[in-house]
Image (cartoon, rainbow, N blue to C red; front, side, top):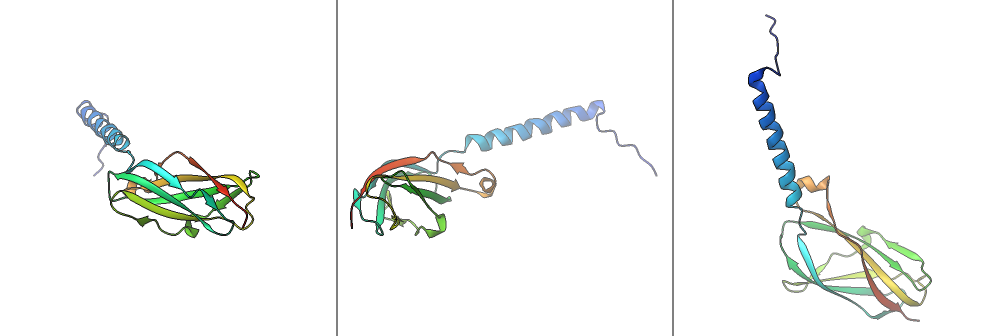
Amino acid sequence: MISKLYVFKRYMISQHIFAAFVAIAIIAGVAIVRDDPIELLAVEVTDKVKPGSKIGELVEVHRKRNDCTSVVHAEIIDGQNIVFKIKPEDLPPAVNRGPTFIYREYPVPFAAAWGHSQLVVQRTYFCWPFYTWWPIVRPVRKLPFDIVPP
């Protein structure tokens, strides 16, 4: 038996319009809830570090959600403007210091030049499976510190 498939008959147009409306509503809802899971209130870094040691970052946060994971991309710009990228897998996990503080250490390379330097940190959040394709990326923060002679 051969049957004809009529998709755009007059009585089917309302169903297509409804399906398009639902799809647009879902996409708009996902875009609206793309809020930061963690709000950074204050950031402090170690003032002076030596090459080969670690620079500490203490962040005061306000947690809006607890179901998110984060990936931190960091780099150090030394006194001669040479950029040292730190691989995310080389970073130790952040340490929770109470409900509102997070502490993380970043290794300072032995080859880093002395002088005024910057720690450049960018955080990416993954909150539910959809965000593996469209993660929440927060702007780069440049935190000044000094590298002193060993």
